[in-house]
Image 1 (tube, helix red, strand yellow):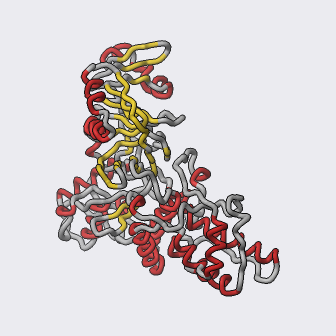
Image 2 (cartoon, helix red, strand yellow):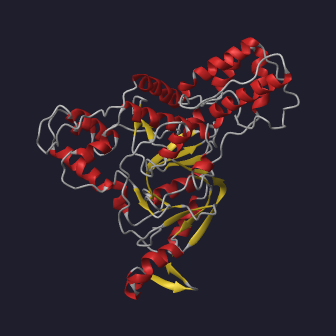
Image 3 (tube, helix red, strand yellow):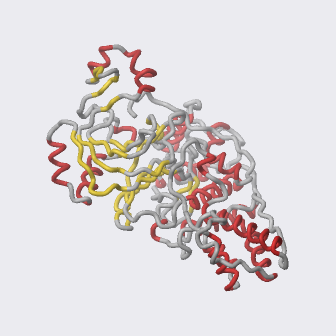
Length: 476
C-alpha cells in the first residue's frame, strides 16, 4: 500500500522567508515607520497577483483593486486592497474560529504593513505576496494539482454508473474503482490489479459499506459509486480547502511537537525539527467530533483512573445497572462513576494529560482492534494512541524522565509524572494526504467539515455520503 504523509506535516522544514505573516494590516506595530507609496507599476503588479489567485485556490472569491494613484484616499484604498489579498494568502481567506465551534490552533501572526511598504519600495509587490503563502513542496503540489484540475472544468463522475458491479465480474471500471479504494486505504495496492472484481476488492467494498451505513452486499451500485466517485471539480474543491487549511497553520511551528490529523486518524511526533514517529490514532465519531485544538501535553499519567463524564454516565452507563459497574471495576465516588486502574480501564495504562478547557487528551485504550479500522473516528472525542505505552516510553526517554516513568508504571496505582517541558500538540483536520511520489491524494471528509470551508471560499455545495457513527464503546 502506498505510504500517505499527513498534509502539513512538513511545514517545519520550509520557512516562508517573510517571518510570520498575519492579516492584521492595520496593526500599530511598525505602522508609523511603514511609508506606503503607490505608483502605476505597483498597481499593475497587484492586479496581476490577484489575477493569479487560482494558484492558491482563491479564484472563486472576489478581491477588488480599489482606489487609484494620486490622492491620499485613493492610495489608502489601494493599500487596503493589497492588505486584504495579502492576508488571505498569508493566513487564510477564512477564519476557522468562525467556521468551527472550536478552533484554538495558533495561526500566523505579524504586521503586513511594513512588508507591503518594503515591497512597494523595492518594486517587488508580486514577489512579496507570493512569499506569504506556505513555502513547502506540499503546498506547491496542491497548487499544481488544483490548477490542472481547475482547467478541465469536468464535473462528470470519474467512474460511470452504468450497471451494478457484482463480485467476480469483469468490467473496465475496475481499475478506477480499485485506485480509489487504495487511495482511501480500504485496499492494498497489490490487490487492485486487472479488470476483475476480486474477493479482496469485495472485502474492501464491504468494509466501506459498513463505515458508511449502506447495504452490506459487496455490490458496487449507485450508493457505493457515489462514495468512491470524485469528479475533477470535486477533487479541485478538496485541494483548495486543503491549501486554505495549510494557510491557517504557523509557518514555523515548534520543532518538538505532536501533530494529530483528525480526518486521517494519524499522529506525527516531531523532535527537534525531524519526524521521529508516526502512528495510528482513534478520534471522535460523528456527533462526538474531536475538536481542532492547540493544547500541550504537560504530564504522563501511569495506571490512570477514569472519572466518567456526565454525558457518558447519564446517557450510556446509568441504565446498565450495578452488575455492569462491578464487571468493569467501576464504583460511585462523590457523585461520579470512577473506573479503577487496570488493562480494561477505558484509558488503558497511560494518559497524556493536556491543558485545555474541553477535557480532550491523548490516551491508551483496551479496544486495540479499532486501530485496524480504515475510518478511525470511533471515540467520544479524545484521542486513542496506537501502542500508547510505547509512545509514552519514547516521550519519557526523550524528555529524560524514563526512570521516573518506569517507577510510576510499576506501582500499579494512578501516578503522575510531570514533563520537564510541555510538548505542544495540534489536533487539526486535513483530508488531502500525499503518496510516496509526493502527489496529493483526496481522502474522505468524515465529519463533513470541508463543506463550510469550501462555501466560504466560494465553491458550490456538494452533497455526499457521511461516515456513520458506530460502535457501543463507552470510552472517552
